Image (tube, rainbow, N blue to C red):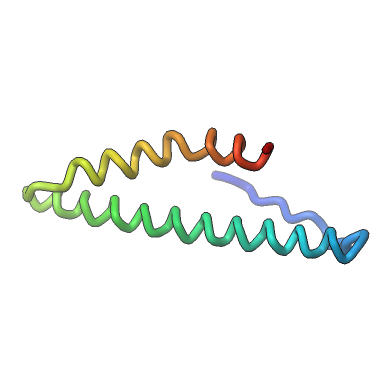
Length: 80
């Protein structure tokens, strides 16, 4: 079970820092919405598979590949 630690809120040292933090939070929220959408696609394909029907294996593989590559791509993108 994962434990989420929320640090005490502090005021930004400058307005620019506040804008940057807001931008980062917006990016993270969008990334989470994208992940949620991909999980829904994967769940849909798995339900099709569970019914004994033919799933779109290319779509399933693309979603799985995305999740395998995603952490490395995000870390590299944020460092540059």
